[in-house]
Image (cartoon, rainbow, N blue to C red; front, top):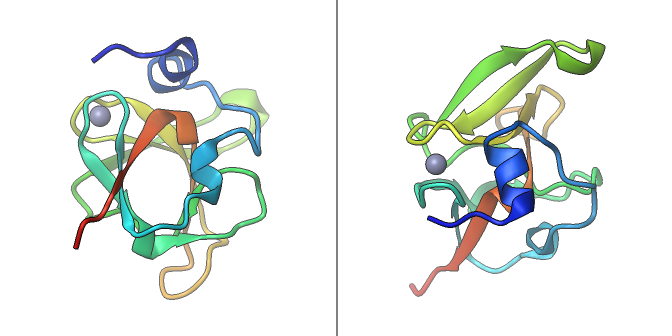
Length: 120
Ligand SMILES: [Zn+2]
């Protein structure tokens, strides 16, 4: 799959897009967000919420198997890095200040994902 420069720096170099730049931020239709690196489905519109951060945010992944996490100590912070379980492409970070029912906030880079409208 061909990646744009932004997609490459995020997925492969763990970059972060500027907030409020992703068209997926305001994607409110029913559908599925998939990894831009390999196409694996990673998040559903059903768990997307408005976090106010400027990044597409979810309170749960599509299922437990589609994303993996690592400890990220870059930038002088301890954060939980989130990546696609299939291609290991970096998607974003995980925080514990999200809404119910999980209390989790998956803070994702929109450029690391593509949206597929649900037909059902
Ligand atoms: Zn992937």
